[in-house]
Image (cartoon, rainbow, N blue to C red; front, side, top):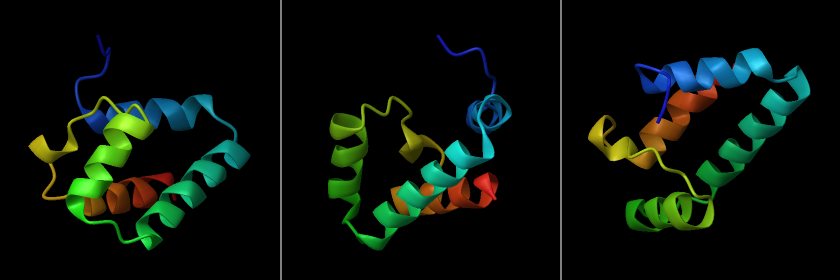
Length: 76
């Protein structure tokens, strides 16, 4: 069970608990994933199965690409 009311709070919590180096590495990995230009189905499969992402972004975001770009912006 998540202790956050909104998904962005999870990201904020991660940022508060992480070093600048870790945040930069995660941002770089997301940018690299975006540069792969996966189709939505492939991206969703990768995030859910390969990365064990349990956030169903498609309930709030029009696509994985849009959500990941939002994360990049949040990470600075």
